[in-house]
Length: 513
Image 1: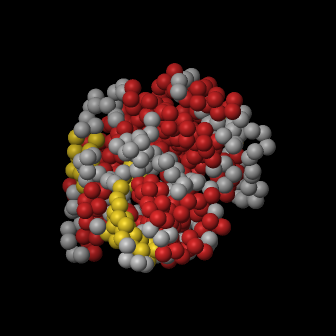
Image 2: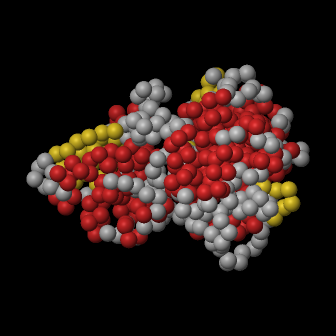
Image 3: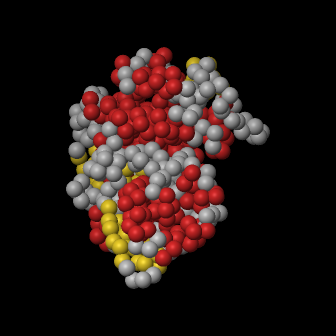
């Protein structure tokens, strides 16, 4: 692994493309290195994981809208959609849009947290859609997905977007473009231009996940995947891109990230320097193995706290019950406190009438319900009647977060033995009794109490889809996906599970398309 120093440069430097981050990512994407067997196995796990949460969301509002838009762009020889038979084929970019929205809607698939945070499984829908449209087989798909994960994970390690209020989908544009370059065997020049175009067109603000969080939270990653496909198509036809996209005098670093802050403070806009790791020539792409999925349908920083709530709920009952709680304080990382905690300053996170999208970004709500119920369900735990239950609202409003520098340090640690996404919980009862406990990692984390393996991914798929899919279709998909390296292009077309006839609900409103 090589560490690349990346900073803004004045135009007079005429920075050679070989020294630009986008070119270095293109080199990684164009490297014909084979994919390791354990990486292949994890890619299969994540395709199963994506399908689990996508099928469970098929009749939710954003998915119905995205599917309606996709079906307005039918194409012979195109890509397929979750829930629909393979004879319904749409343009690949619209398949990526609809399928990507289905994958993200429940906020229930894989995650990677470092300098920034991400859901690297968002790379799979656009890469799979293009594989289907372009007639690629299982081995090509595996190589493309391995690249998508590699680029996104390493961007997330090196470049923080959220501290500058830029949404993390800006890392998906480059990673999905790079993955498509690998899938299609494109040359470095085309991949280089595609990465730059995709980044340029996927910069958006953090308001997607702030205040009154709307369904755009689910659409945003799918939009980045769609933009990546369109960028690659243009560059395959000979078009270029703004360059250098990261290091340019008026570009991303100098005017959107730290350089903008430096200008405002009267300092040099060409600092600081970001440090982005990337594999060297011939080095395996193994970043997917550093990522982790969710056992519970909620923001990742809540995963360990949900598990901890299951443990602490009975202890609170024994100490006098929830009605006798005076306060609950979660001592946690900067990110958890300011993004999903009371440090955000969002009153919506304490509102019983808030949207599901807002509630799954409120650790106060999540911890209260997990304490009381001893379970977490992707539908029941967010139902309006659940959120508005008076005893829940009373407990919820007694919960607050505070930043603990040690949890912040562990959140950002590069040492896997120290890295943590949890908190210490202090419960004070009205009689003065204090209960304390802490948890660093979710049970399902690779280093947690019950790490997810193939059996757990399959169980998650069956749990989320058994009331939707026919058993024969569930079995077909699971058997097929586990043969991924050997799948033909025709079999790749059937990787999206099909819902029973009559199950799908549709958005019948008319739009432009």
